[in-house]
Length: 563
Image 1: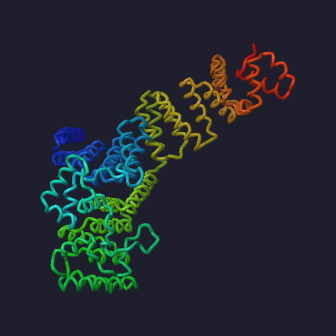
Image 2: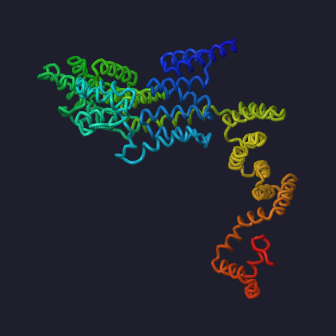
Image 3: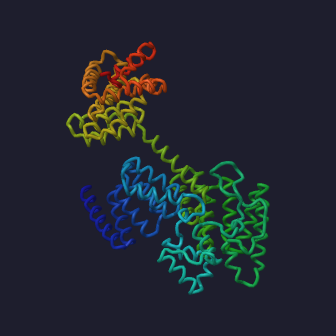
């Protein structure tokens, strides 16, 4: 039955790939989603992430990429998908981290290198075109401009709209000195280019906690004509503000004053009055949600924020205000210790408007979440079971299978040095010497007196024909156990190989601190130059006991030779 489901999922994946290649993004998403109900695997999440990116659903693309990463952290595709989607959201710092994580797994992957270069090029200094790219080429450019009340008015001009469309298609930027174009640029970048007042009457958090929500303003001030508050902008075309709107604003300011004095129930009463008088203004709902947040009534806060977003969407509110409501929802979920929903809503907020503090918060939560998941996954008993399975496969010569179980054992108990040693042996059999050396180093770091770590390392260097390094590794092993037969035999064998290769002898000698000190002495360098030009000069220098001793050491090390 399980095999049948996998086969069905594979067929759906093939059909999804075909739909994606034909730019039928919704069809591809449907097929991948259906496939995931049959077979929950990283490849399907990766493919659906690609489809979401193509369809412009960047937040959803990141979510799927992260699921792929969680299932297969050593597979670069998940990191590549995540970095690409983050770049589309202009979250270049996070994209850079994603591409770098992928390159740790596969350092020579060109696609990841290109992605990293793209992210880094957009982080070069303020003001340069490389710092922001051309925002008019965004696939959802018209939707963003339509969502903003001010730029929506500009789009009613057919010629102006045509100019935006031309810029979207051509990728060139024209007439950016035009005041209307500057306003559009600010909307697309999420940058306040015209010094608008705070649209939500919400100042910075009063608490030092990085997880607090923004409370209502402690000082009430009228919103100016340049305010980016969407509902006020919608009403700017009217000849005057209605009496209900004036009363609503007055009630809101009373609520803000009550909030400042921590009279939360009174503040809610005034915000409710403002909501009743003007139900199309989401700011009043946002402020009420902030009160619930301070009261630690997080479920009520979330419900009001969701209502605020609904009202904002219906009345075409500015995306910066919607972003604040979504961010507050995410912070409320964080207080409820629901990190998954917290990240989800904070990412939705970033897709509306990229606020640096929210982007930083997402990174911190993701880091904490991954660390919790890592710690929760640790189980020494299961690690032992996986290690035993790995040993069985290793003895059968089934090294890829053994590697899989050793890796799982390490995840289950990352402090066990012996598992790293076993995996190093497995990597050696698979000719993955650099990975094997990395595991040996980790083994030695965890347990410096574990002789097997040094013996494995020496054997790897021998296989790599790094005889001088092998000799040093065997020497370390002998320091731990002078009677170790394997170390003694290995040390003698590596010395014989090394002595048969003059270049290897010289290389090892150059690594000796005493030799390095002699060669760095300016007086000795001058003496050696004289000896090279005039062999007879050696007799005079040998009369000095100190110089003679140093020359003898260089002769023994094979650094110099006397003819």
